[in-house]
Amino acid sequence: MTCRVGFLLVPRFSALGFLCAAEPLRVANRLAGQAFYQWDVLSLDGRPAVASNAMRIEAARSLADA
Image (tube, rainbow, N blue to C red; front, side):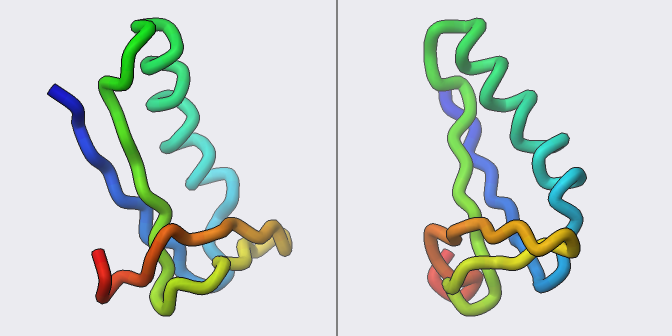
């Protein structure tokens, strides 16, 4: 069974916080050799979210469309 996770990135989000949450999911999938976790990146309007350090992350969809 796959666990689905949504990360809502708001303007000026912490890139470190997001990556510290997403990276263990990616590593767990790699070590297991299968997709135990899937995730979507959401923003309020579906546009790229900009972190406090100016890193831009593409959103898969808006919160309203999730």
